[in-house]
Image 1 (cartoon, rainbow, N blue to C red):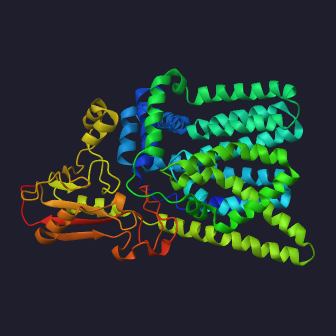
Image 2: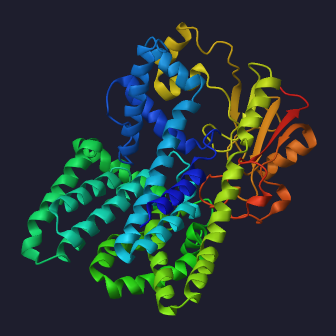
Image 3: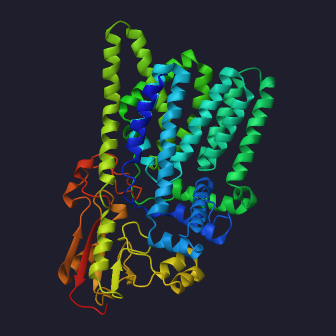
Length: 541
């Protein structure tokens, strides 16, 4: 595999994932991980408040924040943890940037590992194509932008597959132990990725007799368990709490009734990598099973039960398919090279080139358009800034609901800090002279149905409505409330992310509060819901 071409593929992957890191991406769920890391640092411990997800990513950020804090103290930027918290509350972007940069980096690493995986299975040319296909795959590009568990988990899983294949080819026990450790790191980011451990027996048993495989397999599993215990120790230390939190998290992720119908698995795969790549992957699968059945089994054994669990899940988030992207990219690359080998002659190279262009055209174009949309300011930021500039301090403000995804983004108040980090920390910030002058408003929540408000006597002069035609479950104005506002209020500011007349011109993940689409980016003006600020004619607010 030519290193200069691999470097070019890596550069493509980096550009698609690094831009636009300079723009603050909003998603309340993704703010949980940096906040949890900061809570641990302030408490001077490593115990998570919630064990529904393992602590691999939280610990990574906790360690990064600790290094930043110690460096800040050494250079005089922080006097103590109060100053660190003040920086996190008043200007959180650098802290969130660390986590997004980690996702970007691990996403690029996944592309390189995918190229190596393809070269191992089908040869050097297929390795480069595998890396290229993974580099432009829309879903992997998208998840490499976010502060979430998927990008680092997929990097570890891909590394585990590669190490397992290396063991199968060379019989070096060290490779299988590395595979076990990487499988543990993948599981320490997502419990569902425990299926990656299945690559260990698949590789071991395909290498030699069962008796000869016992010792390497036992060593790999033991190393994996040890690594998982180091990275997510409270899963074992507080097993009953971990099991309770995990059941609750699985209910949210898979079983709980949803606000909208999830996308079919076929649609998710189509937007993840594109239909042509899926078709070529089937050809590559047949070739892999015929030429290197042991390697193919080591790759597929973990992915078959994972795919089955995703297919059976009533709540299928699009991001759940990201673990499949490296394998699909590798198999699709194998499909291209094997078709080229069968064609032979001078036309084979031209036909293969055209086939590659067909495969990458759609996912690459959508990845570029996604980056362009993500680079625009979210409507929740724009609306929040308008509210701070125009609504008097202390006035009442009727909004969708506390912590709801479509709320305008407002500066953190002492009450917000007390809620997130505890009253004593909020008091220390105020005593230090921080948070003074921050606008605060008397918040009233109208909820999903609006029944919490007596519209005959509205409790405030100002009303904020948020709706989104493409994601009605995460942006909907109750009909009774809409009728009241039309007759009794004046819209004083509008912030439109997705035009009301766009209908279903863009495809969104209907059960995910992600205001960037999977397809149809041209109609999207800004990320975020459509927010309108209304001024009531009268009211005690």
